[in-house]
Length: 545
Ligand SMILES: O=P(O)(O)OC[C@H]1O[C@H](O)[C@H](O)[C@@H](O)[C@@H]1O
Image (cartoon, rainbow, N blue to C red; front, side, top):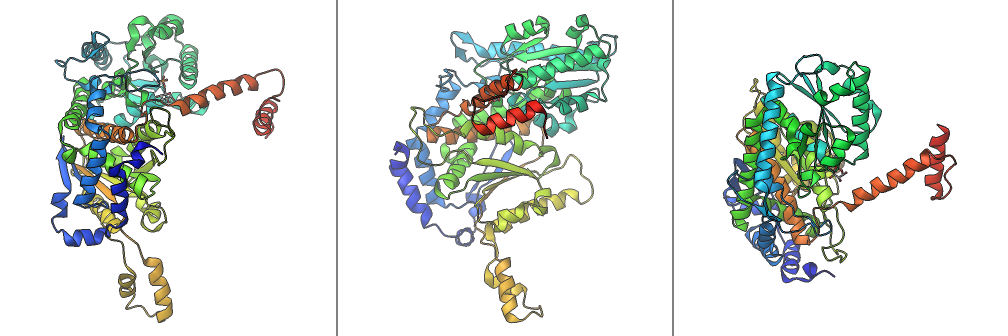
């Protein structure tokens, strides 16, 4: 048994949640619930009234957070304490968006200054490329960026670029390659001209197989297309914390943008890993993205728990996982530009909180991170929302929508909003048997059939959702939104006392993958593994289908 589940706050919450009324009743008993259970911060508005909670639930959740010393844990992260204990690292992605005048000392160095220097390096590069001063090997200006990276070195830049499409400058296009499957890079390179293409190789470790292989193939393609070895410097830059390895690989030392081991991959878009974003939207907009995240950082560290948006959202997620047996959480973006965000939050949360032991190695006796999934509304309404409404699993949902569209065309946005709000309402209130029967009143069906059909139309309701609104999707509000989810993830990890900043499960996959790679190209058939792995390896070796 962990201390957490034996604590007073945990037990009180358990007893309380069992007796809580249906949300419909909660809304009936408090007509001001929307005002009581909503909050604003950093350009974001959060309506959390459609949750299985009343004021007492909220106090019990805040008690749980206090007992877990959440506030001092937040400070420890911001102060650069070594909270990633298994990798012996500080966790300081917040320093990447700190104000230039701030001072954050780590091992005797003010890291904010290093961050600022790298941002200046980025700015010079962005200016050179966008102005056309940076020329390709035949003297032409760059028109296409190919960003090569995977995991955090892919999802952040890709999804933020996609989300900020309305802010792209006209000069550049960007293409992202992550998977080691050759089809990905081959298809991406097909329409491109090597003379006007610039490759950004993004890898914190500079040791990730997929990224190294894709970069080598990109280099081969570049040479095949007419570039020479000497021209590589004009067409390949790298972002990495392993400068030595990047230089050894052949990247010109002047073209390497540094990052640091205190930035986790899934928290790295704010560093030079965000270079593709900066190239597309310009450095001013990139700084606005950082500023939005910094605003959320200030809110997270300063706002009292009861008004703290990431704390409230983190506690709700924990409530459903630990006390209502929810095993997944859906993120529904009612904005086409934000369609990639669920995948981004998926890596952020599942890689951070998919853990089973506490910091001291004790096995947890409660669930930890849920499966995060989702997609773009309204598309999902015509597909998986069926399960949200009538399936047996409880799936809490986040609905995210800007109040104004970047494309105010006819009735589109009002229809989008009506669907978004209508879904949260339907999930909350559901439809009772009596209501379903009443709806069938005019039908000519016999009474017994009506009764059966009415049963099929029943929706339990009481399905929780948060609604996050913003005036408009801008670099600033997007920065705040992403930082909100980063901190929401932190809140849960801190209460569960797990390490949200390592990823040993992913590492194992890499190690075993390398071992299999050796066996696939060995002289003899594999015999030493389990018979399934041997069988698969040997089939591949013989190319039998
Ligand atoms: O940036 P890299 O060192 O190439 O790492 C890329 C990715 O590798 C691993 O899979 C990690 O789990 C990710 O968090 C990381 O973002």
